[in-house]
Image 1 (tube, rainbow over the protein chains, first blue to last red):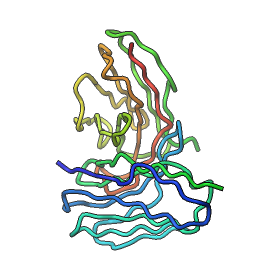
Image 2 (tube, chains in turn brown, purple; image 1 turned 30 degrees about the horizontal axis):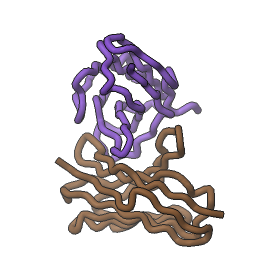
Image 3 (cartoon, rainbow over the protein chains, first blue to last red; image 1 turned 180 degrees about the vertical axis):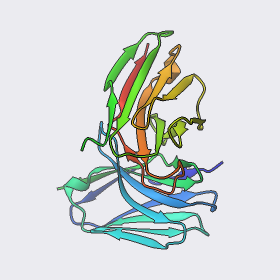
Image 4 (cartoon, each protein chain N blue to C red; image 1 turned 30 degrees about the vertical axis):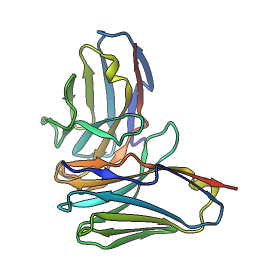
Length: 110
Length: 115
C-alpha cells in the first residue's frame, strides 16, 4: 500500500523567502506525482503534474522535482508572497487512483 | 464554465439517516471520483467511475454507494449515516479512462456532520 508523507505539517516564513516543501512515498512504481493547493474551506487546485519519466516540472514561480528511485518530490516556490498561504498536498498516481499526503500548511508573513 | 459542482455545501444528519451527495461536471470528462478528507489525513478515495456505466471501489468504500447517472453526474449515497462518516467530501473528474495519469479537477466540497 502506497504511503505518502509530507513533512513538516506546517511552515511559517517571511514574505520573499523561498519555500521548500517535501513529499516522500514508499512505492516507486508510480505513474505520476501531482502537487495541489487547497485554500481554507475550498477544493483542491492542481499546480503541477510530473509524469514518472520526468525529473521536474515548472510553472511560473513553482518548480517541482521528482526522484522516483529515492521516493521523493520537492516543491519549490520562489519569492513567497502572502497569497501563497495555503495547504499544499502532494499525491502519487498509481494506476487508477491517487494516494495523498496529509499536506503542509504554509503561512507567508507580510 | 462551472467545472465541478457539488450539492449541498453543508449538511447535518442524525445517525441512521440517509442522504445523497450530488456531483456534476461540465468538462466532458470520462472519469469521476469521490474522496473524503479528514483532519490530519490526506484525501482517501471512496469510489471512482472510469466511464459512464462503470463504478469501482476505492480505498474506503464501506457504508457508501455510488451511481454514475450519466457522463456528467456521479452521486454518492450514505444509506445509514454514522458519526464516523463526519468528513468533508470532494468530487473530482479527469479526462482519460479512469487512470490517475491526468490532472484531476476538484469540486468545492460538501461538509457533512453526523450527530
